[in-house]
Image 1 (cartoon, rainbow, N blue to C red):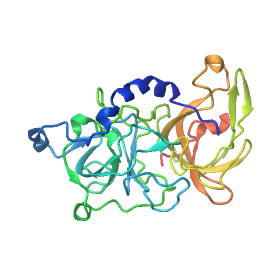
Image 2 (cartoon, helix red, strand yellow):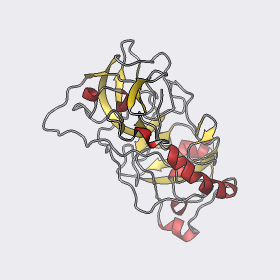
Image 3 (cartoon, one colour):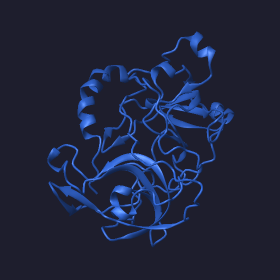
Image 4 (tube, rainbow, N blue to C red):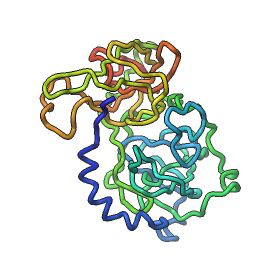
Length: 315
């Protein structure tokens, strides 16, 4: 399926990432002094939206529906966590290209009070903790994991439990940095509408119709690759086998979340900028197909009448 987004940003950042590649290869340490680390037990996450807290230090294989490296919670930008230890495995990649920088480092962190699972722990990719917020810790061990147990995992395709997560999480002004454990290239999650009013209880399930059309200059055409359900609200990721669907297909949605920006247009060519059918959004529906398979689908790949949230709750 033709999902384009962030291509220009990748080109713009490429030079910056090359300049920092030497630093990224080093073993990251805290950007704080020992005195600063002692003054607080919390580090603040920085991202343009919510980020995943995982059961292990890595991404699950594409199409996985077990608890292998499953998403335990999503933490909005600005969330506070306590850093416990680190683990070096592999940087999140797409087709062999690192998504957020080359560092293999993941942090094992514990959610602070005010989170969905205060006291619960999990792995967070290091890019989402700015250098100024990093606290020097030791390599993860069985004793540390036992002392700070992980949140009980759920299946990868299950939507986030809390209905209190904002569809547009706050962004910390000026936060960022690019040490060995961080990179400024974080997926954008703006664009989704605010949650519906609680005065009118939403319908628990709504049918949505698939529209797998992409721009072709000033015209629209069926994408050569079918749409599909994904185990996470991200592009080029986590395809659930056997869920391919083309225009006209019908799914049943139960809720929606804010995920990565998706567009049916061409971000690298302005030729379709005035195309009335061009659309972009960061809203993703959690839906089920006729075979009972469940997963996420960007609202970009639905008909105009199926967009906008349809009064469904936040997952």
